[in-house]
Amino acid sequence: MIYTRIQFHKIAAFFYVLVFLLLFNLYYNINFQWFGVSLIVRVYLYVFSFYMIYIFSINNRSLVDSLRVPYIHKYGKKGELILQFENKIFPFFIIICVTVVYTFIDYIPEKSWPWNPVMKLISGRYSNVLIYSLFLYFIINVRRRPVLAILVFLIISFFYFAGDKMVYSHFPYGPGISVYRILKYATFFFVILYDFSEKTKDVIRTIGSSLLCALLLYAAIVSTYMGLYFLADKKYYLRRETGLALAKLGYPLALRDIERRMVLQKDSSFIDLVFAYGKYYNRIPELTDAEWNSLLFSGKAASADSVAEYFVIMNRQVSYDLMIGYIDERIKDRENVTEFPNLMNCAALSVKGHETEFMTRLDSSGKEMTLWGIQVLSKAGSPSAIPFLLRYIFDIDERVSKEAYAALRSITGLDPVRMFGFTENSPETLLVFKLYYQGSIAGISTAGVR
Image (cartoon, rainbow, N blue to C red; front, side, top):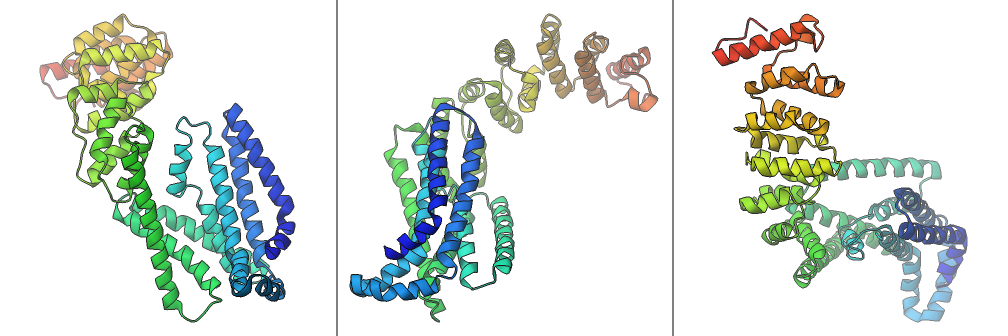
């Protein structure tokens, strides 16, 4: 390891700083909750990786040549191979090890540690530091001048970043993702193998070897997912994450089981993925009314909002009494229920046929319930709510009066403020909405009011 010791002395200060930052990040993540420190360490991890690749790559040919004879003398025929490994492979091995350590430290606050970082690493979390280091390694080894090398590195990195985002936006899941990942793995192996073989002319053979290595790595990842999935029957998080990861790669074998466990655990945190994968693979979740209600009302309003979106998509109506009771509970827990549009849209479906009862309830409710109820009536769009809303455009609470006007504007399609220059709570505005209401119940066209 003579070559490694010589090169390590050049990066020792950077390495010791990285060790200090990782230990500090470990202490901070155990005792505090703030992402800033992890972000600083992540940025420094990139700096350290790039600097190490630079040191191990720039002007090192003379050093390698001078050590070739001592390595062959010490290790025999394997000496050349060991020297090449230290020069070309070992830096990437260090980057991988440091990234693994950082990932485990970064996810310590998570409840599902250590399985959470394990799953992130298998899926390629933070792998970009390895990819960008590979770009830098490749550019330096074509012997570009430093200024030009930096420019080429930035251009390649930009196009990789943009292309990566574009691919994932067009192929977020399914076989396309698997093909893309295999190509990424093959590119990585090609650069390493091509350079490791001292740039022989046998490019076709190198491409074939790279594809074989990429396929083996891909098979290992998929096999790991499947193995963890079948071995983790009692570990909800691990079974859920491996099942979703397999679906993302084009293997939806676990979707039905995930749906069942989602209901049993009352966990709606990943319902968007379940529906996205279900739609893609034509396996839309088949849940009973009781199971849907269990998911909808199992947690806080933010969780219910994500479930409510699918109630609206499927035009599924939830019990009026259950919905109102749930909203009462959330308001008592001081949650701002007006921040969740999907939940209000779902409530608007529930209110239909119960408008009179609902408005009577709002008259005797507190301000937060009234504000929420006015927005629900707006989304329900029933003209029968107009007389109720007209009373509230004169409310002394400006929030209530503005919401009432917005609801009237939504239901009627009229905007007296913009059309005639009236104020929101003027008698003239009241008259415009009254005329609309009288015309609607009499079946008379309101075109003249407009």
